[in-house]
Length: 308
Image (tube, rainbow, N blue to C red; front, side, top):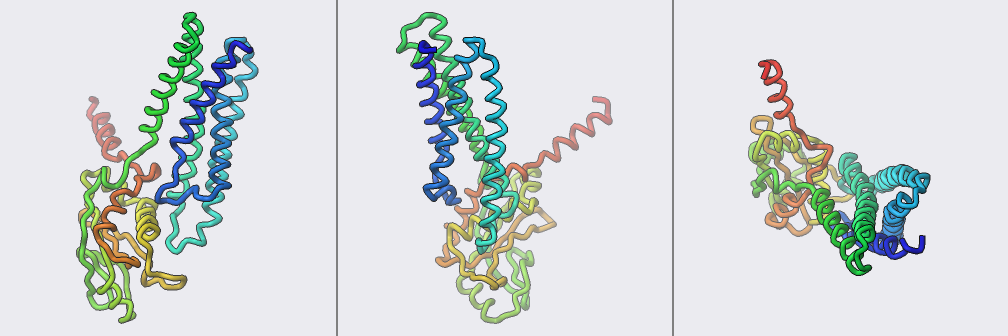
């Protein structure tokens, strides 16, 4: 197996790099603490190691070793469960919760990123082994492995990138108004605010936005409660929110206009800036659980009935 040492090391390094490129602290502020970062980095190395030894194991006809890949898949599913449980445990500490759909989306992302490390290492090993089989010099083999591994990293990273709200809808500023005690935005009733002091704060410091879907599929996505909860959470965490425990008047609520499918939201942030609010909402990710292709299904069913 000494002849495969360079292959394994090259694959391990490329797989680890692939995981590191996907491990960044962003606006969701997770992971931020060293323990979590170290844990995910270590799992990335393990995933890369499993992918690195797969090709040598096959070459040496040690097919039993491949069964470890099945164990790895189970371990990575446990990573998803671990992340889900961790986020569920701290959900009660959030003034504006993420919501179960957002938590599930984050958990699935961490699981998928370990597969990225494994597949990158596997692809790097395939590239190196191909060069070894063709009896190329060592440097050429390494280069072939690095190139193939880099292609896999770029391709998978692009695939896992996903969409954001700005890709499916237009976001614009809106005005807050009151009809008696009813807080309204763009003609949509948000909530009943009976306290005059709370109404005054909304009028002086409140900001609001209207999200206009560009097509029917986007309309279905924005109708999802989990997606709207993610928008509310992102806005409150990035801009700060003028709210404390047991102050329901200042809890941001995204309501849907049943007439046209538009979504409106009013929020009182610590530093009122509607342009920043628009930008935050635009960058909110589209959750996988909220994606819909209802029109495609309806179109297919119609064609089936017509015998097309």
